[in-house]
Image (cartoon, rainbow, N blue to C red; front, side, top):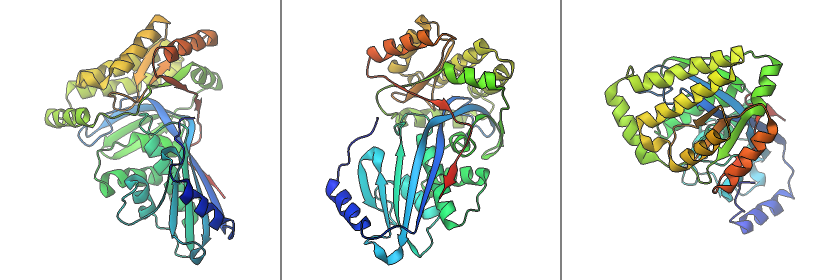
Length: 360
């Protein structure tokens, strides 16, 4: 499991001891999937103006649990347990601990009668370029929405999560990760004018879905994605180039090709679209397809993989999606060779037909 141990056990023990004295009034759970194989990524941004994106929602899902207690029964109004980071902290208005989590909590304030303990976890590590942060944000907002009486549709939930990053935190952020987390499934997104988009969940045969599930492999490159300088450079260049720049159009074109390939069950065509998208990323800046990704691609090509897609915006670290052949034994051999070639880890995935879900 790709988590670090709790760094503040004394804080955790104190919290647990306090919790044993008072039972929660309500317990709400939520889950939202991550995404892989985001062909057409980079075109769901403000500088692209319009875009076409294909992506696949998969588990492991981001998981959120909110325990709501009587307001005056706990020493702090909102306590957050960020398991992946091994941290327990008290939510504050200055968002000094984890701005993304705290901004999301501030967007949908909890009813005044409650004090909350919020637990968050995802098996896929943050920084894996699989939309993990978006999935956590969507799952957290879904749970808070349930706590408040539930009013947000899937589309509204996705756009609320996107606003947390763009409007509340002032970050660069597209729309596809949040839509995948909110809706789930295999998606074709048509962004007609940023950030407004329609999303079509592909209606595929059970046979196609099973085969897609069997063929997909997600490889974590052993370190979290960190290429902000490269991304800033690419954004400056694309902003100056305009939305009809040939490099952006090359990325856009891979999304409808991916959609059509799945409708016809043409795995070679899907793999080709993935490869073309990865090379189009490299055309934006060679550093967007890092040395570890190139190493994985070389191994995958040697073993007859049909396609590969550097997930997310690309750069050093992060992850890559592989589209393998029909023989599971060959896929297992490929994974073993990849994992023996460096600090690479296969993250088991399954297709996730549902988007954000909550239960109480």
